[in-house]
Image (cartoon, rainbow, N blue to C red):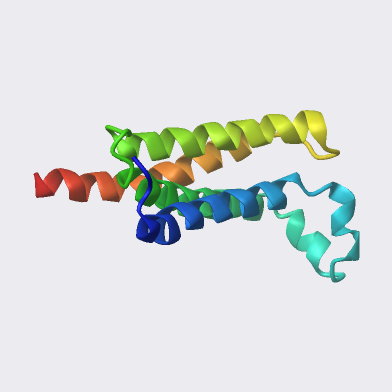
Length: 132
């Protein structure tokens, strides 16, 4: 069954675009940060900021994936699928950072990714359950 044009523009493309943006941001080599303003490196060393950024990136990813998966009849539990997809994607990016770039993959980053996706998708699940 073809994807309706409206769904393509309003649900699937935003999720795909955000996936690409997150991938680009988290796959940037460390040397890409050399041209940042002088105050920026100090900000990057603030570890909690890194986790907050991961949390926010994946919270939005979770919501966009949920919106996309809800429009696909082949996905029986779209909110669970969105959470799992975002979490596993975060894991894959962390493994990729560790093995393919000059950056390091961290379990804490992956946990922030999964927590962000979960916190964003959970209220959608509660709202959906109340509607039934």
